[in-house]
Amino acid sequence: MDFALFDWVGKDRNGEVALGQTRAQDANQVKLLLHRQGIAPSKIQEKAPTRIGAIKGKEVADFTRQLATLFKAGIPVIQAFGIAAQGHANPNMRELLDLIRSDVETGSPLSAAFGKFPKWFGELYCNIIYAGEVAGILDDLLDRLATHLEKTQALQSKMRSALLYPLSILIVALGVLAVMMVWVVPSFKAVFLSFGSDLPAATLGVISVSDFFIRHGLSTLAICCLATYAGVWFWRTHENFYTAVDELLLRLPMVGSLLQAALTARWTRTLSIMLQAGVPMAESLDCVGGACGNSVYALRTVKIKENVTSGMNLSEAMAQSLLFSPMVIQMCAVGEESGSLDHMLSKVADYFEMQVDHRVAGLSSLIEPLVIVVLGVLIGSVVIAMYLPIFSMGHLI
Image (cartoon, rainbow, N blue to C red; front, side):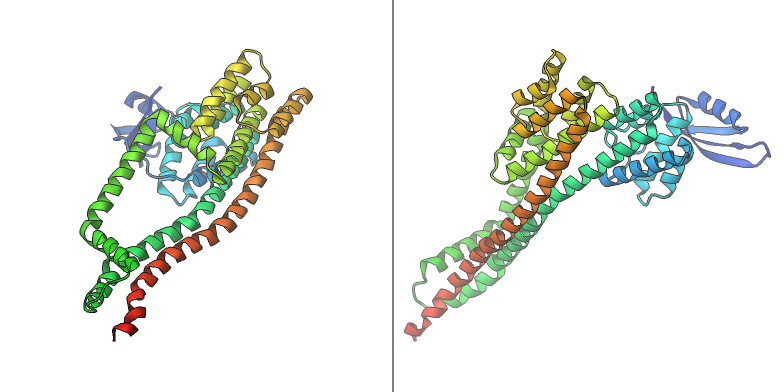
């Protein structure tokens, strides 16, 4: 059921002017809610819908942790949302929490209120909240959900940190090369032409590249930007291409094994928390595939669900998917036999998160010197090529 946001002005029981906002189905429902609060409305106007700006995943994780803490302290839902919204630095997050609180005030279940904003609260989030509401253990499941989101954010941060340093160095180096080609090399070229002798092949090659940069640099940059935009658009809108890119990333040397470890950790962690919340296996697998963020894992999780639904054990279905190592499958099999599958999956996630830590550290220690060597060779080659004619000036005098 859709709700709209209404601005209203009225008078309270003491005859004083009161104003505010209420989320409801229509103006009549707003009037009814205000009368229950002892407010006589004089004006009710539907507010135009607003687009909520950027909200980071870390902010959602921090809010979930705060909400879990407030619930454990016995703070009522409406008051808890008010505290969380007032203490948040991001106005977009405050607006989002106010909208959710308005929904809850009008009688909407908390899981349904979160479900209206799938951009920030996905299927996994809403299913956990729903399970907590039904079982009466919302504070406990919120605590587990907050832990899950925090671990997911930490994992993503480690993956980004492994790529950030070499990428920043590469951008700086390309900028330096561009400056050399556009401004430095032409200055040397004018000096070399005054020598009146043949230039070394390396120097002629660098000058040719510089001339190309000067004549076609802007058009080349524009073509590269357009090609990048077109590639990203194609990647987002064509599922087959998206899947092919994800599969290629998983097969890359070094990076592929790191991605597989990270995705296995996220897959098992998500399934573990869903099972701990009491969500049935089939519904849990629906959430797990989408939560991975990789189309290959999502598609094969659908097949795993089909096999499990038809009566196959989870460990056997995982083995047929060819996504998981024998150790993961064996741990799941032990968990199924002992009735502690959720605990075993959590242990597997812990192990692979540790593996990601080690591999990120190893990859960073390998990439950093490699990047420095490659950039040193590139820039050094340009510098040497430009100084070769100067080194040979002795026999021209």
